[in-house]
Amino acid sequence: MLGSQALETAIGLTLVLFVLSSLASAIVEGVSRLLRKRSKDLEETIGQMLSGSPTFDKDAQNALERFKDTTIYQSATIAASRGRRLFRTTAGPAYLSAKSFANAIDELTDQATEAPVRGLNARLAMLKADRQGLSVEKKAAIESWYDETMSRLSGAYKRWATGVLFAVSLVMAVAGNVSIFHLAQLLWQQPSIRQAALNAAEQAAAKSTSPDDLIDDSVKAVQDVAGIGMPVGWQSGTHWDNPMWATSHVAGWLATALLLMLGAPFWFDALSRVVSLRATGAKPPSAAKDSAAATSLHASAGASGASASVMASTVATALGAVAEHGGRHGTAPSAPALGAGPSAASDDAPGNHPAGSD
Image 1 (cartoon, rainbow, N blue to C red):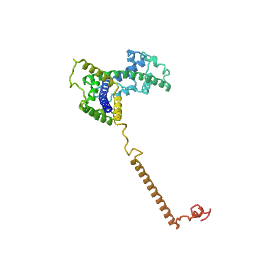
Image 2: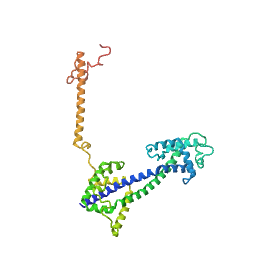
Image 3: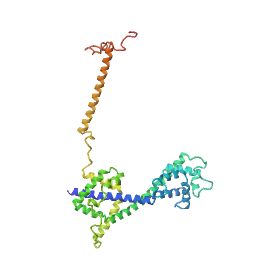
Image 4: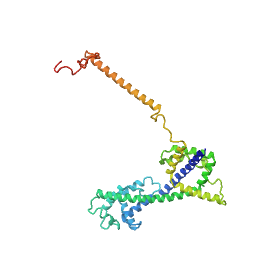
């Protein structure tokens, strides 16, 4: 009983963290799109790459403007602006492949003049001094340079997203009074709340098969955490004059925010695992999918019997055709006599007459 109670409490906590982390991740993604974080970072990084500047200074801005004039980047911008007509934005692409970057550099060096943008000529003049197209080796070097730079940029974006996720999670924890310690205490003491959370967790785990369905499917099954009896919100009032209450709640909010930083995919996987653990293992396959079950064996035997019936029908049809052929020629096939040798049974077979016989 104690083990089941502890496991059900863990399932309830995991459910709350799963739903809140999904919501927090969605808010962070919305903030990123609103600020055009990815596209701005990409543009500034490309400008610094082409100019060799440590910061996005005037040289980097000029180099970026030259890069934006290439047809490769303009095509990517047109594709990225699809679906944004409502907001009338001219945001550039959030992503650019290494191949497209190398092709844009090839086009950019074609457009270079005798007095190119400062900082741009020093890095690119040696790539195409003969005014011919970039070789495969040079394009490969450019693509490698771009991939390494984008890898560092991706790390910087993740650090930014982690910081924003913590801030969003902390605001959610305080606004909703979601203290992980308070939740654990009430889930442990209230069997009805624990059972409601368990039912919702099983539904959420059954509806999704991958973290890609987090917001579309799983969160819809538990749209309102308080609606299933979870003890969140400020209905119970505050007791700031009680140092124990204040300390435990502030610590609980911080702990909740830190746990939400692990992300929705992590809590989705944890929810699936604890629900499966309570069910004492993975769900067994149906009889039709179990090769050792009688249903599968019976189906296999039926298929084999059907194949044998088809084979027998084919043989009977062939024998009938042979008999009909023999009747038209005045001969009928007969079984060889017992003890007769091979020649006795096949003297009239086609091809056994001597050469020139009729």
